[in-house]
Image (tube, rainbow, N blue to C red):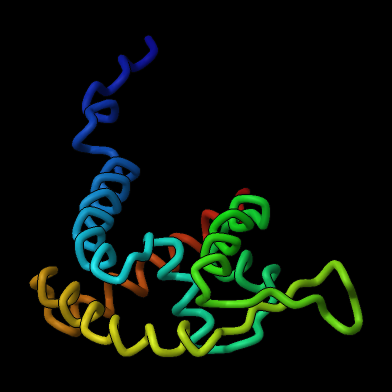
Length: 149
């Protein structure tokens, strides 16, 4: 006789995906007022973080690092450019490749966001070791899931 389906496996609170989704929503909610103060969306903030690490990165590189389609990033990059935070320049070797360069205003914005990571970390109430372990576990999960897609 076939085994009856386990109803516990279909409970919302038992879903890993829901735990990740609802945590992501809560994290975005935490970031919103912090980023509103500097007039950035979360995705704009991520792009700026990448540029503060490596000015001149290509849109393709940004796309790969953020696990986003280039087409989805185009309006975000355009908005950052309109605000005077970065410029887009075609590559010398390939006109289709666009490099992103911080403007003076974009470089200065870094000082205004310096405290955000610490504020978010403090709000999480995780100790440093637990935060690092969680980050590594999530990165491992992301890597495994990307192998399947």
